[in-house]
Image (cartoon, rainbow, N blue to C red; front, side, top):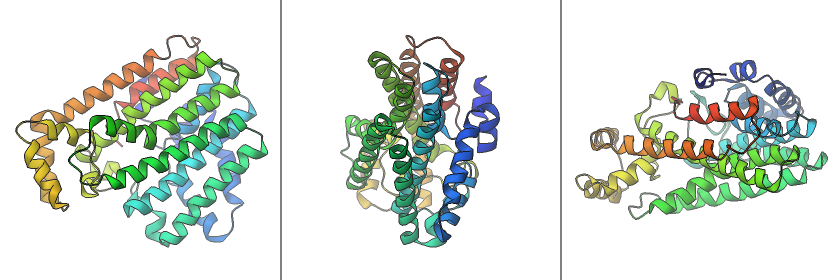
Length: 330
């Protein structure tokens, strides 16, 4: 599979064409969510049908198939991983007061925060029901740790809003918790269900963590430089919400623009014109390119971590997936 094919994987239908194993996950998600009652069923199925790349179940399945043929446990773990991801998106939209996601109204904008939070809780509960019913305790351990980390990451981000004193180390700690841990958990979850060794699990952990870094950094870049129609949300949402991401950290280090940006952050209020001015500064200073270079280094580290993994088509797909992260437009 080519990088371009992976890059073009922008919705669920394309994903299942390129990665037929995801059909098993998609079918089970439909069955699981169809069993919900009333409004929860309506909101869950609406979110499922809104698309998504299914990266987390893909990592679970292919992370396992690097070491053994696909088995039912890997599929169940992949379903649980996607349910956890869906739940976290719903809760994130409530926290960020987001009106749209993927160009469509969010659950909270349609049904209110109360219904959205309970829908997210339902999805978390359903994920753990699947893991416990099928006795996937090793997968559950990884995923529970990831959920705890995501919660800590969100709390830390909220506590650091509009702060000009965040260090690069703090930023990477935050994105480890918000993004890296769940991707890592998916890789290790599939691998352990395939009988991977302790050394192989460590290698999959390194792979998942580094693609998590790269995914979040490219997300940070797209938030300020992307197209609103492609993103499905307004450009500059991170900074409007006071979330200090890597491009802004680099800009604060810049001798020309650093103090200027810090003064803007002190006001805790940004206009659309202000966002545009900051975008221009990020481009002219080279800070966006600097952030992209950091993401590229993370991808190189991710691919290097797979060097000792058995040479299979599935390993090749994980390598191509890593490269495709740098090609993202959404």
